[in-house]
Image 1 (spheres, rainbow, N blue to C red):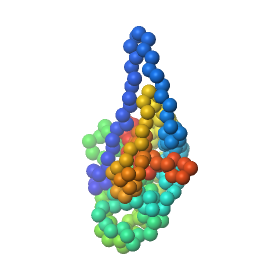
Image 2 (image 1 turned 90 degrees about the vertical axis):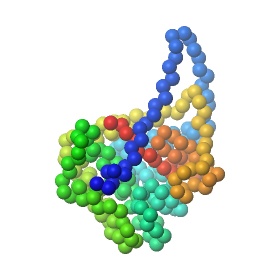
Image 3 (image 1 turned 180 degrees about the vertical axis):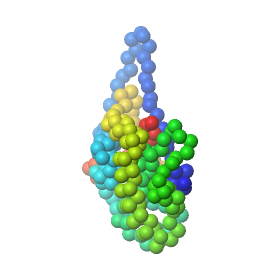
Image 4 (image 1 turned 45 degrees about the vertical axis):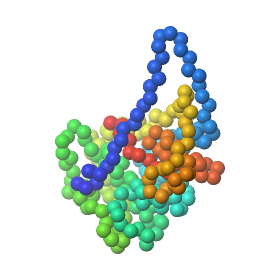
Length: 230
């Protein structure tokens, strides 16, 4: 199961501030407008995604609108292998990325940590045994199959009781807002490491599992890491 072995699932880290019984006062800091808006857009993504687990919808509402940057994100995070994607048009590539992410999120919900081996119906196994495209011609077929995979995995999740329960837990966790830090200042970073999404000196904010930039008058997401809530 090639895809199952490749999924990165880093854990959320939660910082806890513990005060001693004696009165200890920690001065609250003031965050920049960019930081406040960065947290807002990340929470917006989670709110939208929690409603129906539609990555496409949440992506379009909160991610970068810059065509070149969207393409760079798709190449950097789509896990399409070493294939030269120069001849693949932006729409096909970005749609394949969004469907790929949707499949990966659904996979997190299908995995049962209490079972040593995952038992899927033959058609669902096919999704994970397919492998990556080797040519641009295969990529176009691969992109079409991803769309079908999303529909079939969504249906499977709906009808599998254990997966349905994990889905409810996942949605509940997503509705918990990411809180703006009160006692330290969130500062911008540079040297974003994923592909060519940003130049080495361009600034971004790491908000939990999200990378966020200012794009014109708005803050927009440019990357997301997988998070575990189970």
